[in-house]
Length: 304
Image (tube, rainbow, N blue to C red):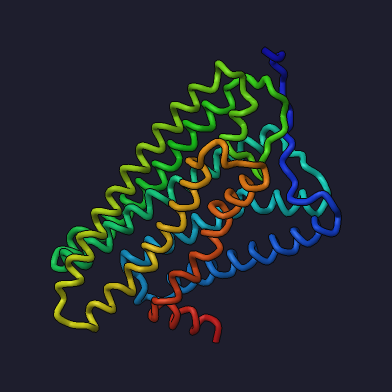
């Protein structure tokens, strides 16, 4: 076994080797980051400023926008700084902070998406009970449970990952501190604790996915029974954006973590991680605003 070394910093994987391409990547990342901040900021402002949007669905969407801003701010600014200043270094504490906040925000986001599926289920399948089941107190408790679950998930993974001894250097083959890449640096007989934590998290997220699927099966059955075409259109317009966001997040994350070992390379791993860590927070505002006339009108009034 290689000697166990004390690591004070990690080396992240660069997107490009030449300065011209690094500057190009910086400009691209900056554009994506500003678009994400603008889109999510407009949603936050529209929901906060317009009383007619003070409903459970938009309350959860406001929380989703907050999580999206935090998620993309955890990974992309460091990647931009590295591209601009031609460096790969991230401190040990900075790497631990990235792991903590990434697991916290992504975990909380998926728990929140599960809550949002329940909100759409009650709104469409049990409309007469919507006010009693999703009152302001219940919504606050469910949102707090999502944030709290993400926090506990982050504490679990950060504590187990950074308690492992490292035997294989400090080069992380990713543009941010991703747990599977850090595990590759750990001693071969020490990574099982974090592997067990990953299995536990995947099991919980799989249970959330089953809940979302069952909810949408019930929603689809209820929508198809609606006599009014206008009612069906309105129901689909509130459900399809949520379903698109869940599908985008789950498909990219599953491909990143469950792809076969032989179907991998540093460049492919980086591109896939970019898809699940950066793209969803940037495009979620666009997805939700495309079919939501009420939200588009509120955003338009802010800009006029």
